[in-house]
Image (cartoon, rainbow, N blue to C red; front, side):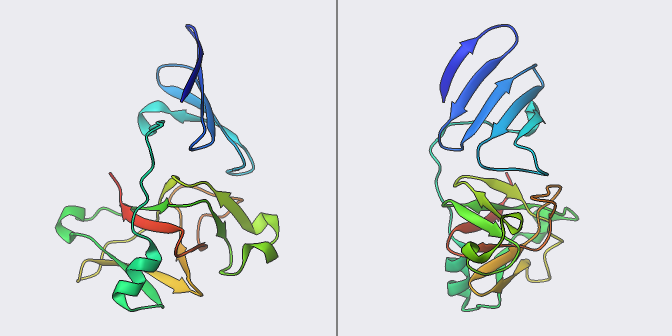
Length: 179
């Protein structure tokens, strides 16, 4: 991160990796502005500082959904295995990790044919919490695959008015445990 002028009120930084410009307003909140990314129609938001990490560390991609599906020899769904005992009754314990800049879409088709309100460019390094239930008896959480795209729902986050039934190209994203 490139550090700007610092005073009693704010620190401003621009992170070229995540394309986030942010101000530290108080000890417990940051004002962030997202470049080329809108949530509920806005690019500027206040976030509770203990709930976010703003960092400039190098991003390391994780195994893609496509690679996991190939290992499982299944093109209809991908299973993400977790230890049922460590999850307990917890829900929403997985995240989608964007390995390379991609487009989240409302349909599993080439993004060039979709209207802007049905797609969103998501930068590499973005991690978002997924809506998930408890794993099944084998410890698997299942995500449908359609035309080389994984279908997922976001927890507590709307993009362009939608939180559920988004698609991402299987080779651009991975799914991993939170934490």
